[in-house]
Length: 202
Ligand code: GAR
Image 1 (cartoon, rainbow, N blue to C red):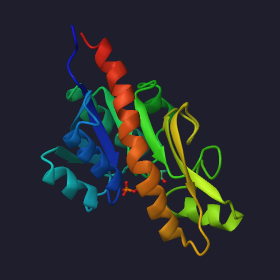
Image 2 (cartoon, helix red, strand yellow; image 1 turned 90 degrees about the horizontal axis):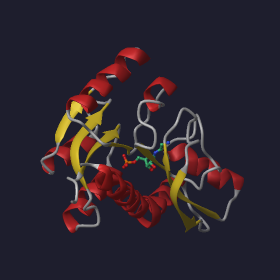
Image 3 (cartoon, rainbow, N blue to C red; image 1 turned 180 degrees about the horizontal axis):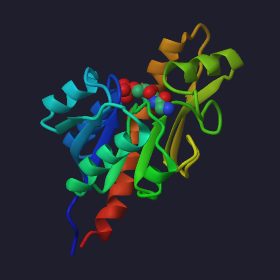
């Protein structure tokens, strides 16, 4: 017999356009094996929280204190709701090995480059696109990968290439990478992983 839908928690820090892509994907049926059950932000003023509330998804703010307290508060929120999959969508905090070891192949992250280019500590948000433009690459893209203790180092689930164009600024390139890659491969990857989880839920 088919199991219930996988319960997803999305961790955010900012604008939440990737969260919005997941909300839209659930509505349209692209994401059908998982259910967005919780959004956790480390920033109280993240616009992602407004997007979650508008979609009727429960929200929690966990402010960053010391690492151990911060991570154990997040773990409590996840465990108390029996979350199956954690999605980092613009979550600007690196999680420790202690945390990632609890959830092997149960944490996804979207990164705005073709890993292994322009990734690891210090490469986040616009900085990634600045680095790509400075290096003069002609193709960049986005990657969805499982999260382990190495920043941007876990197994790759999906990648999509995006053209760099003459005259691109970091902002223009960021927008193109989001539109053409991130907002597509994040929901698609979530569906693949949730489908596998669902098949194993009794
Ligand atoms: C996205 O481009 C995401 O890939 C990136 O931050 C942006 C968040 O936008 N994440 C990282 O750089 C993580 N290393 P959003 O809040 O609108 O989804």
